[in-house]
Image (cartoon, rainbow, N blue to C red; front, side):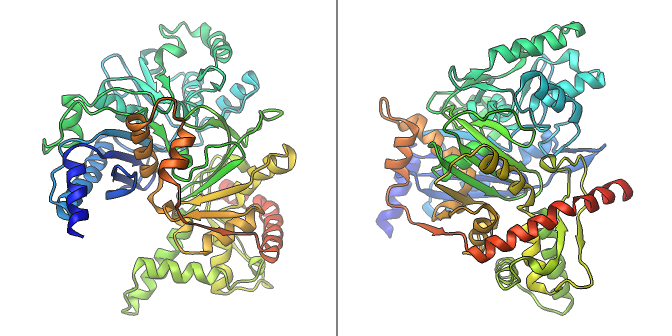
Length: 535
């Protein structure tokens, strides 16, 4: 053991590691990996978005407090485990939740509070741009937020000098470079996979659409430069090093890989960037990514078209609402237990209650719920109202209650996947799962397999998530051999020999989900009434 610790300490002190930091919806995670690409230290910072003036947002102060806290947690763990101070590393990468709206003036001043992916306030812009481009422009996309701000006549628009994503903003502050990874760029504006850049024809259409406003800027001039995985995206400046590590130990000059979105890092972390592979990320939001063999026949408002970190086309079914509502119910159960003087660990609580879901009736006993904390674009809701519904004849017990909460978290996702699998005949050989839903062994896999009618695999590394994914992209940039593709790097140097468990769809569970899903679609009128009648 001592020899292993000494070996890792030497890697750390000689800068042969890579660091990845991802800003998720509820957690900022930092991962340091060694030469073998396995994690050797991690750090965490818990945070939450705020609903201010009818906008879901995070403040810039909270962003940097969270990044610094997560990084320091990792660095402290390195010192505790290996007796090493983190002064340098071979490469760094940053990732964050995709989409949203961050715009700055020529002095670098934020012009309006960060509007996150969770907002559903750009309906008119989304519809008009989708029709104009004949290309799906979801409400979450940066260009939808920009055009909606134009339609709203917002005073900040003429002052815009730079528009980017959260990962692009962090990277800019640390390196001075206005760049973005192609996967994250595909949530800003449509990408032309043939040239690995923004779609020039569609940029022209946007220019004609907005020329009557006589802005001093053109859209492409305010967008970050697009880079693909493996390209160098700048170096950590002295100011950036101090911003990341206020204690002053970290040195400048460390190379950074292109900043990426959480969709791209999820694909990397699950080794699902090849054609006919897919992954499902199940956390605060739930989304499925399927790498396409060919383009879809037409634009669907329910489906995003994004790219892998190397620029290949991906269909994305993205549900805004995932774990938030069932997390709230589990907190309620925890509160009840404490009133009885009982302390149950969070892990035990989730394992027990998730396990109950497998004991429920296949169709949840007639129960129905919607975990719509916010709007849900796939089912065409701009606002949400969490609700639970049952009839007098429903089988109302804990097992069915937990089962319906897990089933409904996949309802909107299933709506999008039905478009891909049934209308577009998209083929996928296997879907890999990662995120909180899959932490309880076997439960998430079994439920998702039933919902998607597809084998679901979970790798032993799935718990490392997107922070590990962006660390791998940083390592690929630094350590790749000449002409080594990202697919080869992942297959041969990262995932070779890694254990994986596969769960096939259970026919009884799959039929049960189908029955539930009919109820889910019929009950959307109840959700609509709740939105219209409950403030």
